[in-house]
Image (cartoon, rainbow, N blue to C red; front, side, top):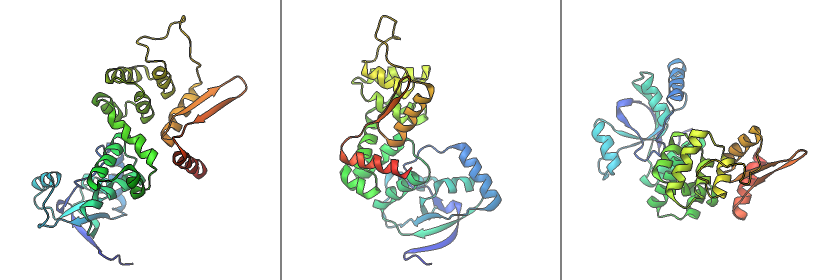
Length: 284
């Protein structure tokens, strides 16, 4: 079925530049290699999506840099950068594409939504994309939540990660610490304390639960001694569940274990956040 304003073509790879507003900064090399192998065997099963580069447009700084590196380019990628990169890795000179007109205002949104729905952005990339969307559209968190179908509390919690000091952000982007760890670190007031505890998380393999307890206790500078109050410990399974559930529901999760029974507590910030979490629970 034909789509108004869109057409299909097989384009030369040299004609296409990446999305100048691509929120994703890290591409897994192993995943790209697997996709390249699949493309070599069966081809690109789903076309990428591009838009024509209009010579009358005033290019942004990012777009100008891409055009200088690839002056023969005629199209800008909207969606499908993994497929494009993998096609190049596989040695393909052409790639199937859908050509459509897309306004600048929709370019970042489309790229963000594809990454949210297809390949998980790391938490910092997602936060940066939210911030850029809000700046580009002059939008509030509430307006952004409607535009990209994300709850306002979820957007707010993700944006808070940008308040982390650069050294901690690098650990989060590189996967040394999880989003659950990062949210726990935001409970500290001083950047130096966040950096110090982030180092301990990496060096000692601290769980999210342990990190939260250290933050609650005021970040002891050295390990707790027997003369100090001891915090309740949970099993390795409980610690893994805390980390998994905290990331899955984008909120703080605590687990208490007793001899015969225990409890799981999932925190929420208001009615809207409760509805978001309830929807996730019912979906599963």
